[in-house]
Image (cartoon, rainbow, N blue to C red; front, side, top):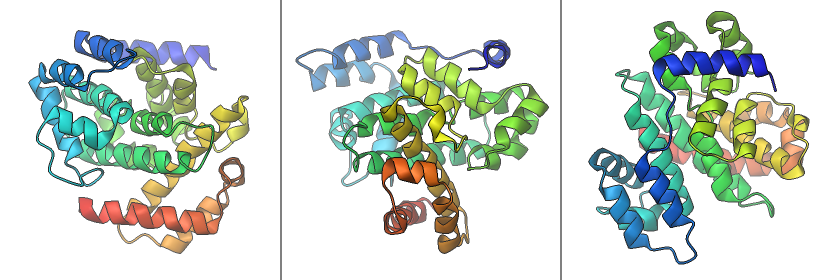
Length: 281
């Protein structure tokens, strides 16, 4: 862990305002962790924030999840599942807190949601990686992007690289802005109360060297995020060559080994991504 990079990035984020858990989020977390969880109590808490409620309903009715019309927070919990609902609440609160009007942010939001869904699909194949952890890692992996865009308007030119699988982007960001969205994501994730394993995986999510994570479960979670990020970006590009995307993914042997994925699995995942991406157009 590069302590100096983290220190510099913290200073940059503090000049914008590092998001933290609001009173509603703290209360929500306490309610979700109760032995006898009350869905209605959770819905009542979230309903206190009109903007947050609207954002959650928008997500629950989006192509990422919509199976039926959802018009209440209780309905959203049923559609999203309790753990994913918590993740959506956290990132929605963060999204509402950053005041910036830029059309590129819709691309950021859609990419984050798609990566979260694909990562959770991959995790469901595994025995020891909770799919909700994969979902949260996917949802937050690029969470620093809006903050860097707010601080540095010139950052817009690097958005596609940041949202893709370009392993050089962290070095480019560090050279041009003295920070990176990966380190920024680590800091923001920690401030929002995400677990240490997810925070560390977010910091290294552009690194194809999965072996840097010593814990086997962390390696598989990191591999889930890395492959989900790559395939979601590649397949989401207009006019992308599906077979070329699969060939590129097959070169990431460490991640595929950790996940026990082969070409057929990648083809199936790419088809899932294509289906959702088509609904977003």
